[in-house]
Image (cartoon, rainbow, N blue to C red; front, side, top):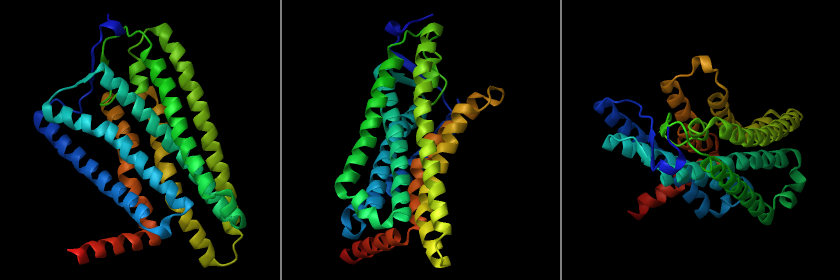
Amino acid sequence: MSNSSSITQFLLLAFTDTRELQLLHFWLFLGIYLAALLGNGLIITTIACDQHLHTPMYFFLLNLSLLDLGCISTILPKAMANSLWHTKAISYSGCAAQLFFLIFLITAEYSLLTIMSYDRYVAICKRLHYGTLLGSRACVHMAAAAWGTGFLHSLLHTANTFSLPFCHGNTVRQFFCEVPQILKLSCSHSYLRAARFLVLSLLVAFGCFVFIVVSYVQIFRAVLRIPSEQGRHKAFSTCLPHLVVVSLFLSTAVFACLKPPSISSPLLDLMVSVLYSVVPPAVNPLIYSMRNQELKGVLWKLFEYSLFQQ
C-alpha cells in the first residue's frame, strides 16, 4: 500500500513486452505523428497565409488544427520514447502535466466543435445575418471562450485528481495518464468525491452534444428547403467535414467511457484510447481537405509556388 506522498513516478501500460514489437510501435507512432504534424501544419500555414481564407469557418479550423497538434504532441512523444527506450516510467509531475494538457486540449476542442456547429447553423439558416453574428470580434471571443473553458476545466480536474491520496500502487493501466485510470489508484472514499466531479463534466459535455444535434437538425431542415439540387449539395458539403469530425470524436470517446466491463481488457482499452486520442488529430486534416475545394486550391497554389521558387 502506498500513498501520494511516496509516489515519485507512475508506470504506464506498454503495448507489448516484446522488443521487436516495441520498435514497430515506435515507427508506427512516429509515422502517425509526422502525418499529424504535416497535415495540421499545412492547414495552419494555408489559412494564415491566404487572405481569402480569413473567414469565421477557416478561423475556427485553424484553431482546431492547433488543438489537434497540441493533443497528439501531449501523448505520442512520451509513448514513442517509452517504446524506444524500453521503459514504462513517467514522473509524478510529468503525469500531472500530461493529464492537465490532455484535458485542456480535448475540452477546448470539444467546445470549439460546438462553436463550429453554431457557425454552420448561422451560415445556412441565418445567411443574411452571418456577418453580424460572426464578425471578427465575435469569432475571437468564441475561440477564446473555448480555450479558456478548456484551461479552467483542466485546472480544476487536475487539481482535484492529484489532491487525492493514492492507495493502490502506481501502475496506470493505460499508455498515457488518463483520469479514470488515475482515479483507480486512489482510496475508495476519495474516488467517489472525484467521480462526482467527473459526472458533472459529462453532464456539461452532454449539453454541448444536445446543442450540436439541435443545430444540425435545423441545418438539415434548411438544406432540404433549398429548391435546387446544386444548392443543397453545396450547403451540405460545407457541413459534412465538421459532421464527420464530430462523429469520429464523440463515437470513440463515448465508447471509451461507456464500453461494457464484460468486454474490457488491457489490450482493448489501449486500442480504444488510440482511437479517441491519436486517430482524430491525424485524420482531421484529411477529412477537411478532401471535401473542401477552396482549401485544396490554395494548398495546390502554395505547392506550385514553392516549386517555382526552387
